[in-house]
Image 1 (cartoon, rainbow, N blue to C red):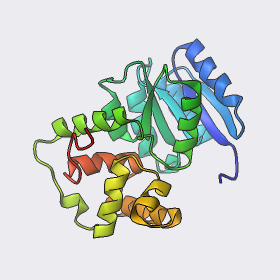
Image 2 (cartoon, one colour):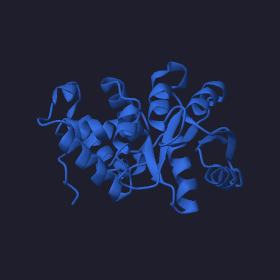
Image 3 (cartoon, rainbow, N blue to C red):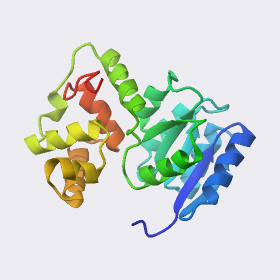
Image 4 (cartoon, one colour):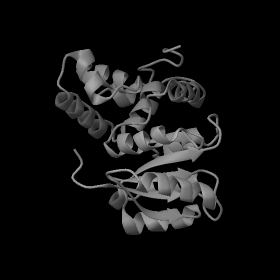
Length: 225
């Protein structure tokens, strides 16, 4: 249980979209919109000043695009707890993968249902990855298949067998509770394993674990199809 309201920054160059997301989220219990940005530069500035829990970041924005803004947020130690969810008009946006590699915790299409948007904010703020929808796994799998011609398993050399099992399930999009059920562990134990994997691999969050799982060959592109 989070001890305070989830603080959200909304960044989009379209005023109606920005205002709509802000109004929807502000109306929810336990969520507070602390700022709105019209471009990536303003998003970066406000993220630095306000240190929100979640940033909803449009990709295509003037001055500084959402991709670069996400990269800069992820690179700042003071913003290590900020989770960026990139917003896109199309599911196959060519910049989605780069945004995830840059440090985004996941992505949403702008026409997502209101309830799904609210759920996404809560899920990401709680430290989970926004990776449950099958389309996200397929997109990441396709990206990993073309990103490197030969998988490199070296980064995973320091993981135990149990940690490899857990990482595989993270790549499947399972939550800590679901991982616990699958491996007969408590959710707390599953969370501990995930935390250790993140530390060992120097990964920012669960989304980057998914990318590493595909790139290292721990899971294969198309394995869920």
